Structures are given as structure tokens and as C-alpha cells.
Length: 458
Image 1 (cartoon, rainbow, N blue to C red):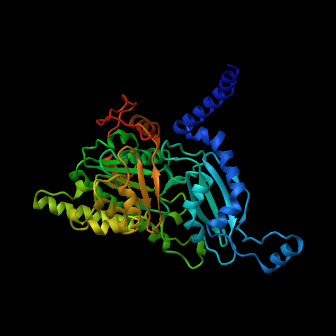
Image 2 (tube, rainbow, N blue to C red):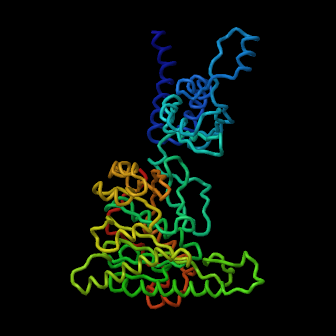
Image 3 (cartoon, rainbow, N blue to C red):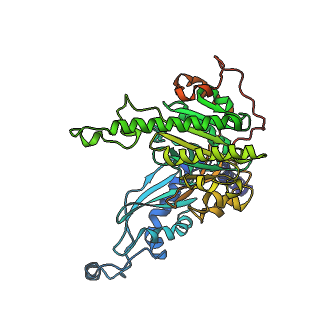
């Protein structure tokens, strides 16, 4: 009986502790990492660093001087030397450390062993980035940060920079319009594309930026943000009138730049500019961001007259994509599918859209339309997105790099409230006054979505 009592006294707390740890790891991974995962993984890394590097082929033969010193002082075997390790820096989501590569090594050697390092040290993922020649940084992520998205405190937001999602390496994904002026965002129904758009609009609503929308679904996506929009078109007919006005605004800005370039011989070199960002602040026009929701609606035609109107709108969009950056006009094009089958000009317009974000799509061809021409290996990653994870997407750019991202949940009511609270920042662009949407003087009842909401974070 005493043995049973002792077993219960010792085994009971241990079982409760193990069960609690398993429950915390499954349902609260961030808390589990901070309490148990971090010290365990750190101990594994410190205790097995040399042997793991040697097993991964990242250790190099020691120098002759080192061999002679070891043989002269000790009789132990001379083992290969691993890369020099820097200080281990813990974070709320993992670990970070820097490695100084040995002569003859390159960052690709470490990146090729990332999966082996992940299993050896018991973490969720290992990412390798180059800091400077000869130095790489290992970012160890302790758990799946895309399962329950929590944006970090330091987001790095700024003018025309909006943190809209979280990368799989636990860093924020910033939509930087100065770096990537135009972007194409694709996604099927309930894929999280609208949530991504809400974050963009809510983030830009607090900045001195003119927001323009084209929503040919009668405005069901962009109308709740009317208080902050400088112009809104809700059907192809209105869009056919709005786009020429934007092109005219772009041409006027180019005239302003050319006037500034009519310079005297004694003008300092730093005052010469080729875009609006080089103009003095008191002369610089307000940046304009054009949101096009469901771009396929602009391409669909039923009659020959509609076809002529379509060709004109596509031509205006291509001009804005080609020339808008220097004039401070940026495009955010969204849709479910965007390919050559839409009609003349579709491929040319897509080629001008530098950034690409692909949510879950219905077929592989749609993923190829978004990512196939810039990062072919990202196409399969986009096709593997499960319907149970709305908001998950693959982001790429023309540099060939890509990563998985996920947008946190933002309700339509909260995004609309942000736009109403920022209504005083709405820019009055004279060329766009006929298209200024009507908005109530006070916030109405919370907008009701026609789709049953499903939180992006599980």
C-alpha cells in the first residue's frame, strides 16, 4: 500500500505536469515556448553544436597550427572545426544566432542543412539569411507562428509602409509602395484576399494618402470605407470615367516635374528631380493609391461597344502602371484570376505589377499566373494552401524571392471605423471631385458582411 501511495505522490504531479505541458504546446504554443521550449532548445543547441555541424558537413579541417598545438598539449583526437558561433539571442518566437563561415564555405551550404538543423535542435523551422560576407544569421522559429497570427510589436511602419501580415519566419510583411509600387493580389472566394485588402486600407487610412477605389461589384467591398476614399467607382461605366481622370492627374504631375526641371545653371544638383519625391515638400502632390477589386470585371464585355470601353480602360491602367510611380500613383490590383484569357492587354498589365501575393486559388493555372513568371518554385507552395487556413498566402517579387505569409483577422466593422475616424485625412483631389463617394457624417451601424465571418486566426 505504501508503494502505491508513493507512486501516486510522485507520479501524479509528473503526469499532471506532462499533461499540462502537452496541452499548452497544442493550444498555447507561444506560452509553451517561453516556459519550456526555449530552455530545452537552447540546451540542445549548446550541447550538440559541434557534433551537429560535423554531421551536417559544415565543419572544416583544422589549420596546421591548431593540429600541432593540440598534439603538443593533449593526446585527444583532432576533430573538424565548426563555424564560429555568436551569442544566442532568444526571442518570443525562437532563437537567433550568427555564424562566421570558414574559408571556402558559402551561405548556401548552411541553407541546405536547415532541415537537418531543425530536427537536431527540436524547433519548428530554421531560416538562413546573409548578414555580410562571411557571416550568416540563423533564425530558429520554435512553433508555427502562422497558426495563430500575432503581429510583433516592432513593425517598422512608415510613410507608404503598411504591415499587413506575418511571415513564416516571424517577421512582419510590409507593403512598401516606395519599393514595390504596384502589386497583384490573387485569391479564390473565402481565401482571405478581402482581409488583406482591409489591412491595406486601414493602414493607409492613417497616412496622408489619397485612396481611390474601383469596385465593380457595386461597391460591396470598398463602399464601407467611403469616408476615407477620395474617389470610388462601383461599376464599369464609372470606372471608364475615373481612369481617364487619374491619367490626366498623372500628366499634370509630370508637367509639375518638368517645370521644376526647367532649372537655372546655378541650381544645386540635389534640387534636380525626376519624380515627385524630389520636389520640395510644399510643392509635392499627395500620393495616390488605386485599389482595383475584382479586376476581371473590367475586362468582361458583352457587346462591341463594351469592348471599345474595355480597351480604353485597360490602356489607361497600363499607362498608370508604366508611368504612375514617378508621379506618386500606385496600383493595388486584386482578383480571383488574371491571365491572357481576360483579353488584350492583360498580360502587359500583369508584367508591370512588381509585387505578387497569391492566396488559395482553385487551380494550378491561377497560381502560375501570379507567381510562375517570377518564382516558379513558389507555385506549388501556393497550390498547397488548405481551405482551413484563410489568410495564408505566398508573397513574391521580381527578385525571385518568396515566402509564406498570413494576415491576422480584422473585422469589416473595425476597418470601416478606422476609415471614419481618419475621414479628416481624406485628400481633396480636384480632378477626382466628381467621383467623391457620399459618406454619413457619423458612423452608422456596424457594416454587415454578406459572408459569414470566419476568423483568420484559429
